[in-house]
Image (tube, rainbow, N blue to C red; front, top):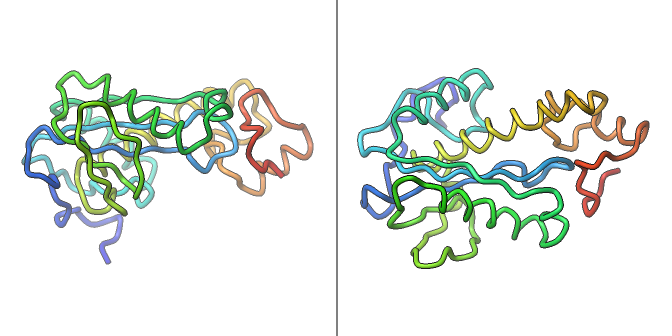
Length: 200
């Protein structure tokens, strides 16, 4: 198995071979607080920087460095989000698809095909798609999307942490850590918590 400290030489460029295939991924689906974020990325065919991989396998510093490279060199990239209110209204799965659709709609260069991390997706009007289980560890543009979604969401939660410092969002990004749950028991939920989730 490739470690996070080695180059991602084995990742594939696309599924269809079309240069305007966009990779899609989301971040924050399993969190207790904050929006869900998603990214859509179209990469040049030869884009393969060292260490590009599933964002979960990378250090925070490496994710930030790769984000700068992705944003500078991608053919097109965009980030979308769905709010806590939308998550509560339509459920987290549908909100994740909504965030992905918003990212696709914001691409400066239109996608021809969507390759989506996971096994389910709500079709985007007028665009074919393929789902790829574990795609963030198999395809470069999905790995890039996972890095953008993760880093933009982490930064958003760090800003929210300035307003609500007790919950440790700058460290846990809203995920259900022991410290996060302890803060919920001590202080109760904030307006940024997803009340439809099992908070305690």
